[in-house]
Amino acid sequence: MTGSDTKNPGPATVLIVEDTVLVRLAIAAYLRDCGYRVIEAASSDEAILVLQQSATTIDILFSDADVAGALDAFSLCQWSRKNRPETKIVMAASPKGAAVAAGKLCEEGPYLAKPYEPQAVEDYIRRLLALQSIEESS
Image (cartoon, rainbow, N blue to C red):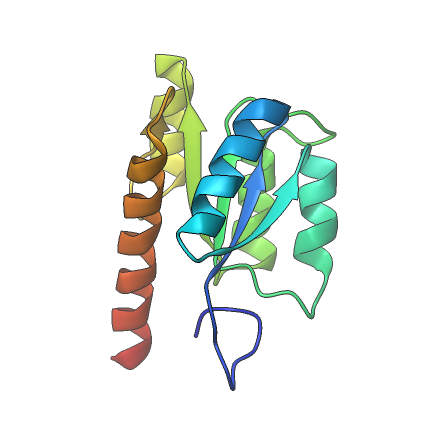
Protein backbone atom coordinates (compact mmCIF):
# COMPACT_ATOMS: atom_id res chain seq x y z
CA MET A 1 0.00 0.00 0.00
CA THR A 2 1.09 3.54 -0.58
CA GLY A 3 0.08 6.73 1.17
CA SER A 4 -0.43 7.49 4.82
CA ASP A 5 -3.50 5.33 5.55
CA THR A 6 -3.65 1.65 4.60
CA LYS A 7 -7.48 1.69 4.52
CA ASN A 8 -7.56 4.67 2.16
CA PRO A 9 -4.16 4.73 0.53
CA GLY A 10 -4.46 8.09 -1.24
CA PRO A 11 -1.47 9.57 -2.99
CA ALA A 12 2.04 8.20 -2.50
CA THR A 13 4.23 10.14 -0.09
CA VAL A 14 7.63 11.38 -1.20
CA LEU A 15 10.22 12.67 1.27
CA ILE A 16 12.54 15.09 -0.52
CA VAL A 17 15.91 15.61 1.17
CA GLU A 18 17.65 18.55 -0.48
CA ASP A 19 19.53 21.37 1.21
CA THR A 20 19.43 23.74 -1.78
CA VAL A 21 16.19 25.58 -1.10
CA LEU A 22 15.30 26.55 -4.67
CA VAL A 23 15.91 23.03 -5.98
CA ARG A 24 13.86 21.50 -3.16
CA LEU A 25 10.98 23.95 -3.63
CA ALA A 26 10.89 23.42 -7.39
CA ILE A 27 10.81 19.62 -7.32
CA ALA A 28 8.40 19.59 -4.37
CA ALA A 29 5.97 21.88 -6.20
CA TYR A 30 6.22 19.78 -9.35
CA LEU A 31 5.56 16.51 -7.52
CA ARG A 32 2.62 18.05 -5.64
CA ASP A 33 1.18 19.15 -8.98
CA CYS A 34 1.54 15.51 -10.11
CA GLY A 35 -0.63 14.45 -7.16
CA TYR A 36 1.97 13.22 -4.68
CA ARG A 37 2.00 14.04 -0.99
CA VAL A 38 5.38 15.71 -0.43
CA ILE A 39 7.35 16.19 2.76
CA GLU A 40 10.44 18.35 2.59
CA ALA A 41 13.64 18.04 4.60
CA ALA A 42 16.64 20.34 4.33
CA SER A 43 19.05 17.90 5.99
CA SER A 44 19.54 14.27 6.89
CA ASP A 45 18.71 15.22 10.48
CA GLU A 46 15.26 16.47 9.44
CA ALA A 47 14.76 13.41 7.24
CA ILE A 48 15.51 11.01 10.11
CA LEU A 49 12.93 12.80 12.28
CA VAL A 50 10.30 12.33 9.57
CA LEU A 51 11.26 8.68 9.00
CA GLN A 52 11.07 7.95 12.74
CA GLN A 53 7.46 9.10 12.99
CA SER A 54 5.58 5.81 13.03
CA ALA A 55 2.35 7.44 11.81
CA THR A 56 4.01 8.65 8.62
CA THR A 57 4.35 6.20 5.72
CA ILE A 58 7.06 7.32 3.32
CA ASP A 59 6.81 5.56 -0.02
CA ILE A 60 9.81 7.23 -1.67
CA LEU A 61 12.93 8.80 -0.15
CA PHE A 62 14.32 11.18 -2.79
CA SER A 63 17.69 12.51 -1.65
CA ASP A 64 20.47 14.57 -3.09
CA ALA A 65 23.79 12.75 -2.76
CA ASP A 66 25.35 15.85 -1.22
CA VAL A 67 23.00 16.68 1.64
CA ALA A 68 23.65 18.53 4.90
CA GLY A 69 23.29 16.96 8.33
CA ALA A 70 24.93 14.55 10.74
CA LEU A 71 24.57 11.69 8.24
CA ASP A 72 25.71 11.92 4.66
CA ALA A 73 23.17 10.88 2.05
CA PHE A 74 24.55 7.36 1.73
CA SER A 75 24.34 6.81 5.49
CA LEU A 76 20.82 8.23 5.46
CA CYS A 77 19.80 5.77 2.76
CA GLN A 78 21.43 2.89 4.62
CA TRP A 79 19.56 3.94 7.78
CA SER A 80 16.33 3.97 5.80
CA ARG A 81 17.02 0.52 4.31
CA LYS A 82 17.54 -0.87 7.82
CA ASN A 83 14.72 0.92 9.64
CA ARG A 84 12.16 1.56 6.87
CA PRO A 85 12.77 -1.22 4.33
CA GLU A 86 9.42 -0.60 2.65
CA THR A 87 10.59 2.87 1.57
CA LYS A 88 11.99 3.01 -1.96
CA ILE A 89 15.08 5.15 -2.44
CA VAL A 90 15.95 7.49 -5.28
CA MET A 91 19.30 9.29 -5.17
CA ALA A 92 20.22 12.31 -7.27
CA ALA A 93 23.89 13.00 -7.83
CA SER A 94 26.01 15.24 -10.01
CA PRO A 95 29.58 14.00 -9.60
CA LYS A 96 30.06 10.80 -11.58
CA GLY A 97 31.67 9.00 -8.62
CA ALA A 98 28.74 9.83 -6.36
CA ALA A 99 26.34 8.64 -9.03
CA VAL A 100 28.11 5.29 -9.29
CA ALA A 101 28.06 4.87 -5.50
CA ALA A 102 24.36 5.77 -5.46
CA GLY A 103 23.76 3.14 -8.12
CA LYS A 104 25.27 0.47 -5.90
CA LEU A 105 23.05 1.53 -2.99
CA CYS A 106 19.77 1.81 -4.87
CA GLU A 107 18.93 -1.68 -6.04
CA GLU A 108 15.69 -0.58 -7.74
CA GLY A 109 17.63 1.58 -10.16
CA PRO A 110 20.85 3.46 -10.09
CA TYR A 111 20.31 7.19 -9.74
CA LEU A 112 19.14 10.33 -11.40
CA ALA A 113 21.93 12.49 -12.74
CA LYS A 114 21.79 16.15 -11.82
CA PRO A 115 20.67 18.39 -13.24
CA TYR A 116 17.49 16.38 -13.70
CA GLU A 117 14.22 17.24 -15.36
CA PRO A 118 11.23 17.22 -12.96
CA GLN A 119 9.32 14.97 -15.37
CA ALA A 120 12.17 12.42 -15.21
CA VAL A 121 11.88 12.37 -11.40
CA GLU A 122 8.12 11.84 -11.57
CA ASP A 123 8.49 9.09 -14.20
CA TYR A 124 11.09 7.32 -12.06
CA ILE A 125 8.90 7.52 -8.95
CA ARG A 126 5.90 6.23 -10.89
CA ARG A 127 7.93 3.20 -12.09
CA LEU A 128 9.12 2.41 -8.55
CA LEU A 129 5.59 2.60 -7.18
CA ALA A 130 4.29 0.38 -9.99
CA LEU A 131 6.97 -2.20 -9.18
CA GLN A 132 6.01 -2.02 -5.51
CA SER A 133 2.34 -2.61 -6.36
CA ILE A 134 3.27 -5.65 -8.44
CA GLU A 135 5.41 -7.03 -5.61
CA GLU A 136 2.62 -6.51 -3.07
CA SER A 137 0.01 -8.24 -5.22
CA SER A 138 2.20 -11.30 -5.83
